[in-house]
Image (tube, rainbow, N blue to C red; front, side, top):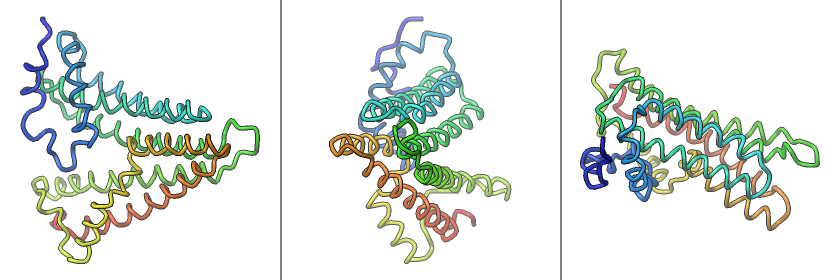
Length: 259
């Protein structure tokens, strides 16, 4: 099978709406990763590689972010970013290959969600272990490992709160939720949600954003010669994750998504 050109691939694997999905498309996908993934697609299309195999590989790279972050200093932070970027690349590629080959499955959707959960959790757990100075010369401070795990739990719960809306509606015999139903019925909650959305602080507990933050903090700490800002970052992300978990739950209950 000959390799299709990028121009041939684009209308099939990037149908209208793919890059414009409000909650389904990451900013990095729109900014650069979808263009890079097209170049990868054309080499994979003629092969027997399946979308689900790519999803498994995607998840592996995401999980590898945790041990990568255990490498001290800037090299570990760079490895963490690289692992997450490879996860994001394959997250684009698996769906695009599925569209081109028309190999769609519920298992693929399920595995994709599992990969997203595991990657966000791996980055934050790895961040906490990094702050605990697991391989340093001094005493291991498990408080930071605990806070990183707490942040990971919050990040997973935020995703679960969204996904469980679909589960609840399905079990209640209702159709999938419409975008308009996500707007809170309370004006106060709606205002708080718009403010949080504008500030984007909640995105810091997602794998891509967290890995980039970790790299920035690693550079600062390298200049300082300690882990002060890394540990501060873990504490801040744990706080954000807990607050966002509560706010997101209130947002879901205050909207029409469960009606």
